[in-house]
Length: 182
Image (cartoon, rainbow, N blue to C red):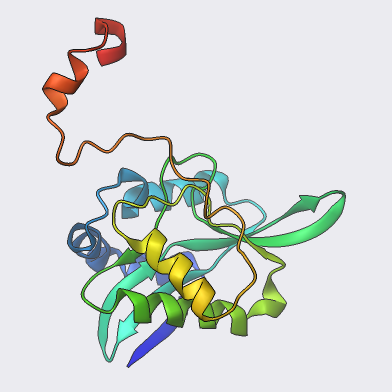
């Protein structure tokens, strides 16, 4: 059974540091912007006014995923709002959930249900720049439809980064000038 545990402070975040790198490697999300060090440094530098909303995804007693989220307070058309974003949004190029194993859909459904149960704490959910290389993007869209949730903004704003998986990087770059290659 999939359960969700929330991390509300830096001490709680540091408790998952040892498992974070392993989960990231096993998840298939090859992304520096989801590394523990990047998330921690980003949080220390840019978190003013934000609240951690990191979700640990558990299958029984085993950690199978992490949703590196935060709640940002800002204004929208002059009104104060609270929006759930990935930690690092707008500074990082690609964002995602860190999920391992065969229960990714169940994990995303559990996350969405948890987020909806805590809807008094936020006004919007904006999951910008989510990469579709690990498949979580497509599962998220499927789960949103299955739960009959209103469309979440940002999920169509994919990263502009080029994935070099299954591409010969050397030959690809030869088509460009030395400046672009660098």
